[in-house]
Length: 217
Image 1 (cartoon, rainbow, N blue to C red):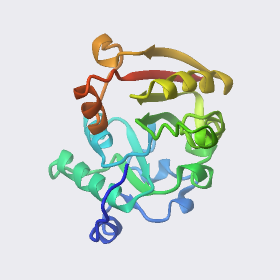
Image 2 (image 1 turned 90 degrees about the vertical axis):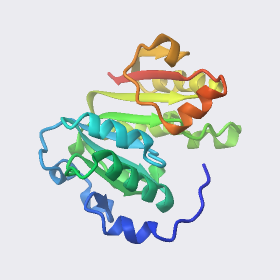
Image 3 (image 1 turned 60 degrees about the vertical axis):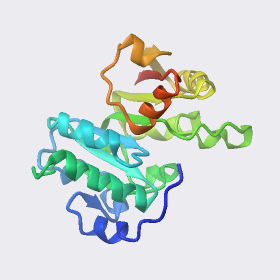
Image 4 (image 1 turned 45 degrees about the vertical axis):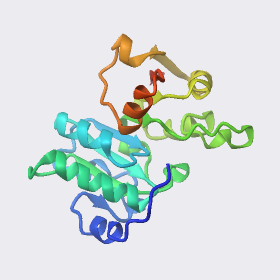
């Protein structure tokens, strides 16, 4: 998703108490950055404008969250959306950072012990030569296994039929067990769901939302 440059974003992020400027320095130490390190730790890959992370983090104060995106403008909007959701309350269970997810093993390892990963409406990369860039591709899943806890989960949502079908294979190839799946999330209502901006847009167009939960064996 393209977004216009936000000249204010970088400075505003660097002044924020819940933005991590140098995530490489926290590899293996993410849990220690939260007020209560004993809470489960969940990770959103590609948080975009923050529609998902802002809702789920304020709804579940018993869980700590990390949200990653590569674009300052996106993260700037996410930062503002999180602040709006907390409405003046202390933000102590969410951290956001800018990083390339393809290089995620530079900032996370097994000591971080992530309990759950969220991947919401990632780029489907439909061309064959680009499919390894998919956030659910086997190549990526093998990386996530390096910092997911045993029995850790991946929650995945998409509007794209081809990506969803391929992802079912990717997860199985990487040793994950698919414990839930739906081809029409809104009708079946079988998973706890935080609706994102993309999700609302696609649903309004009549596109069914596909979703799954995969558990690391």
